[in-house]
Length: 186
Image 1 (tube, rainbow, N blue to C red):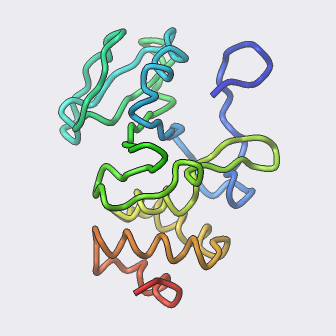
Image 2: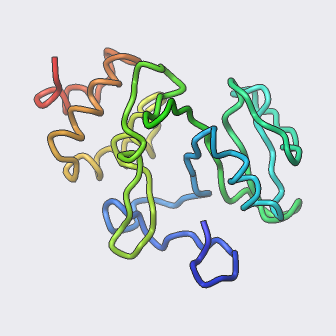
Image 3: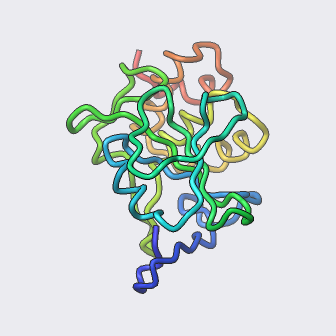
């Protein structure tokens, strides 16, 4: 989350880490944080203006109080550098049990925590594309279709199969499945 130069300031990556080019404009940066690591994230962003969506999905925000531990169903934190600044980052808390990530949408959907993230050639950490696409599959907006189209050719057989399996659990008629199913496990 920082520039690595000791300033403590976060600098967004110049382009999409997965495809290596800009696909579309981005209003903010989405960051997945394991719920068990929320205090560390809160400490790193101590000088930021932080709000939690409470209740989730209702369009209502309230301040994330210092030392407050967020419990389910709260999972969405909006972040900006100062009270009058635009929102620039969104933290999404997700669950983990030991060394396993467990989707907040469906706890039987899991992945080893060590497989959640990758690092670009330039050192930028990013969420594994198949997990990000799984979350994007919920609504499948135009921007999500753009991201899916760009990332799909870069996913290996294992990543495609993993992505198809949880989509089948939460959205068994999702249109992306037709493009993923040839390698999906049955």
